[in-house]
Amino acid sequence: MKAAPPFCLFQGLLLVSTVMLGIMMGMLLTGQTQIRVYSRERIATSAPELTYNPAQPINQQSELTYKPAESIEKTLPKPPDLKYNPGCEPRTKLALIKTHKTGGTTLMQILHRIAYLKDLSIIMGKSTNHGSINEFYHHGIKKEKLIPPKEKYYDILAYHTKYNREVTDKALGPNAMYITLLREPLGQLRSQFNFYWMAKSFKITGPNPLSQFLKDPAKYDHRSPGYMATRNPMASDLGFGKKDLIALTDQAMKSKEEVYFPKPPPMIESFIKNISSQMDLAMIMEYFDESLVLLKRMMCWDLQDILYFKSLSFNYKAKEEEISEELVKMHKRWDVVDYFLYDHFNRSFWNRVSKEEGDFWNEVKHFKEQNRRMQTYCLGENIEKTDEQSSLVVEETAWNSRFLITPEFCTVVKYGQFCFMTLLRDRAFQRIKNKGKPAKPIDPLKTKMKSLYEKPLCEICDIVSRDCTFNEYLTHLYHDKIISRAKTSFHPSGMGGRGKIADHV
Image 1 (spheres, rainbow, N blue to C red):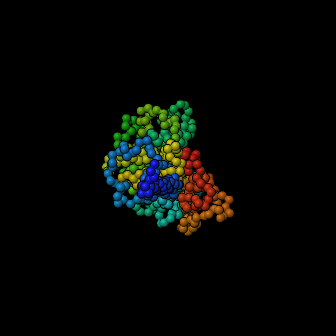
Image 2 (image 1 turned 90 degrees about the vertical axis):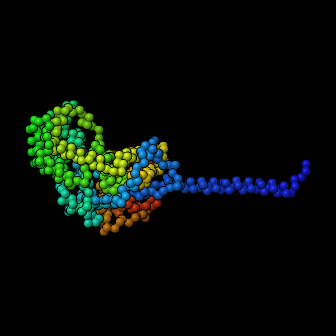
Image 3 (image 1 turned 120 degrees about the vertical axis):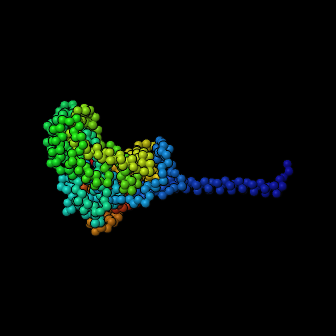
């Protein structure tokens, strides 16, 4: 065999070297790609700060992004380019005239969250007992009993009170928007009957206590009109005089006409006209999601502002009890003002919807889908589809900016009503103590603190411990930057805010 020429040998060596160099470069490039992917995944799985600011765009969708069974973008036509109300500045001045047993607690919780996350001043008493949530209803809004606002005026009224426009205007200042929430009167009665244990209070026994009551409501309910009474409770909440309500009810009950009143008596008509002129939006409980979209548009809010879980929603026998047509007619006479009130605002609600522009119904459908996704994610369902600490991405549409729903957001959206009140109150007390300055970050490791329920981390620590779970309180400390995650060994338990709603309310 002849030896290979030197030139051919050199060519062979050069070819081998080129191949080896190519393999090494490929490995290096692959390693760099793996590093980039790993870094992006680490960013995606780290717990982001609790914020309402839209997340920054990423070059590639994270593998951990929650994916619903059917994308909403596939089921809806492309909406017009509204860009979430162009030229519309978000409003924060809002008064909720909260009526009883109409879904108002769910709406109050939305306002709680907006006040909490945007650091707004909510009209709130200094008292820390649980009954203070109804303090304004019984005693009115009295300046000397309120926690002072951050600025000259408050931003939000969210609690039960008898409607008094003059007093509320003084507290909120000019340009506040006024809203209320109404419910079909028989549905409200069903809710009242269950929540206030009325069958027991009225000593009604038998399988159908609500029907028994409606056969002769005047026999059982001698209470003055109000939230614990069954005569025109919504009208009473909105400021209708009790004596007049009683007189109108008596007049209707004496009527033997098939229709309790062919048209509203002048007193009712005048009241409805007055309330209509003063309410910027009357929401309807049976169309709660549609009402929220109207509220969002009116206040120039984003979709994330109106996400919610239902509060104080129960299943009970009175909800399903069948009521005969004759008993419904009796109730229309007994609750005469509320029926006229609901009928008027229900018609005006749909009249308003008919005038809405910008693909209103597709926005409602989109909102319902995103709220369902949020609830599924925050309850920890389908957990195998996403990492425990990943975030749910809501992409940008014509109706909302792009944002993330984090485990921390899930904790906040599920705060109990008393926990929300207490954390807002504690924050206000800290602000007063610090003379308007934000609380300074604390390093628990450098102090002699024995627990996190000590000053200066909180001002009403025993009340915080009473009303909030540890996970809720810890999320609050991180959100308000009172402590740093890096300087404590504590962390939100389990899946953070993902999981069942706490037992407290």
